[in-house]
Length: 271
Length: 361
Image (cartoon, rainbow over all chains, first blue to last red; front, side, top):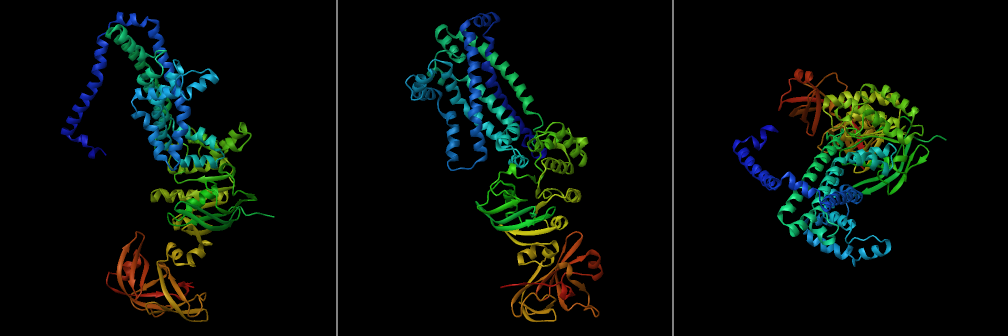
């Protein structure tokens, strides 16, 4: 392979490296610039605010619940898409990807009609169970789930597709029923894809703003609170909270990545 | 009353572009039954139907005295050996072997552990018990897969072309090893392959399959020497299948006029007088000499032109024109002694006893 790698060409290597460098700078510079606006004192002051801390906590918690729901409902669909051929499969695939293309404010409005105070599902559920999607963490989770679940479905599907169906067949002949085959063979072998999907879903959920702010302005998640600070107290406070939130999220993802690497690398090397 | 180890009665199944058509056979305990056929002939589908991955549209499947036609794969007690063995990559060798044990045995505790130790010892796998399958050699994988299947105490082994993806020398080694193991274990086995050599090495009986139907079932020698139609003949290496007409039959000798006008005599009176037949001549049964032999018992002699020479490694295949085309195998030594060259003349002798006749109705 090495001999045919186009990167062996000096000119191509130079052009590609330059473009890549620009792209990385474009990602890094705004974030770094934001960090330079802050001092330890300004960060401490904002971190001491109770509503800032609870907003960050709420974001992490809601995203965690979202990831949990995404696994419960996303894995069955991912498995069906990876194994079954059925009429209308193309339509289902488009449906799964749809949330990625719909503007998030639009998502919020659409969800309001269904899960809002007078929504077609929200109203009967509120009446029957007291569970309210308007102005609660439930509403936040619903909004996050809608925009982020495609990542779980698509990544888990890739994970399932990497599992040789003959392994499932051989497990059946060895006496394992369908549920045991799925839990003892399919799921562990697809875990890398599933974990990747969960990380992406978690990340996407934490960063969601548009759908959340429309369905559930209160209680405030971190992105909503940052916007609120921007409107109420200006750029200074909002960028202080932004830096704080970003730091928390970055540390969290470094830890999660390490955990995922440990889980995903136990002997499941593609041969 | 004793039951055959496995029996299929008129099993039919249509699945997309593939189908199984009216398949019936039965296996005695301990027999190795080879299903031989080209790719796309329905071999794997037949195997997977026996394993329970597909339910037949009609017909019955019995394993021993159990009717398993509608049974799920996990209840059939079948050891399925896939090509490259499908070992669980996330489990160690010992865990792979334990997989079947978990579901089959109620006493999965200490009795189960000793069963694993026995299997590891029996197949010489103790040294690699804690390794993951990814980096095992082909032979090790084969033995782990066998041990894993044996742990589940199968009534029947099914092999789906286990050797076909290997390079020639590894294949020869593993083939020998597998033959020894199958003989030792004495478990009833169905072995699917497209390779005639494998079929002849393993089989107690052979079935030739094409387009989802069994064309011929019989002992290896029967399939090899007395194919029932042109497809089977060609598939078992009878290159020369020539159309003809029976002129007369007397004293066990049939006189055949070939479509190209030549007369051959065949010691096969299965075909009736004046019926149309196919004369089958295996390329290794033709003897070549420089001049017409004076003391040969061969009834059929033809003067032939050498059309082409193919070097096949251990042997050479000589394509002759005797008025009809004839392929002949020669050893390298004979080839040199006869001084064969393309375009030259040679004499081809065929004994009446090596010509097999297939009747055309």
